[in-house]
Image 1 (cartoon, one colour):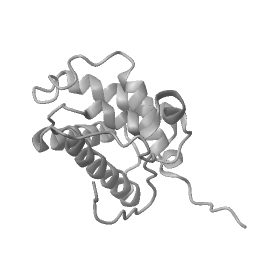
Image 2 (cartoon, one colour):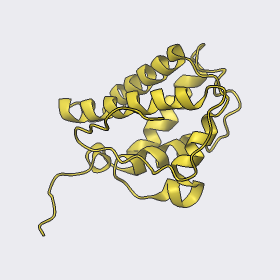
Image 3 (cartoon, rainbow, N blue to C red):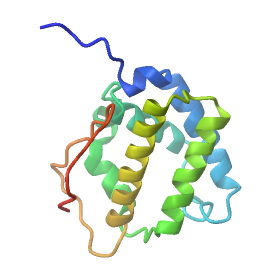
Image 4 (cartoon, rainbow, N blue to C red):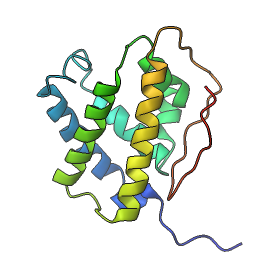
Length: 156
């Protein structure tokens, strides 16, 4: 079998160093944002690093988030009973994309379409998992996002 020469999204954006810069700068902006600051007010100093590792794994990088933190079930657990709203979700996505622009992440339409697709999908899942009664599926697989993902209807 011949291996694909198409880079992963993780490789295309520049790897873990770029994701660390992105999440560090993003959470600096979050601390200044009236809508999002209260959501992350008690965030630990290591939060940006954890989010970088999660995004890296989802976008095709190393499985460090799963190995060190427990994968997607752990991420879901972080959202339980947070009562996130779609206004907060939209602002989170908007601010992350603005930070990607600020740091000059790749601007090609294919990459940005894939990134926006994941951020929309993942942030909507976060809202669902933040509502009363949501539970963690301890067998939930880590999302794997690539160039042009279609996941089918959400089945909770």
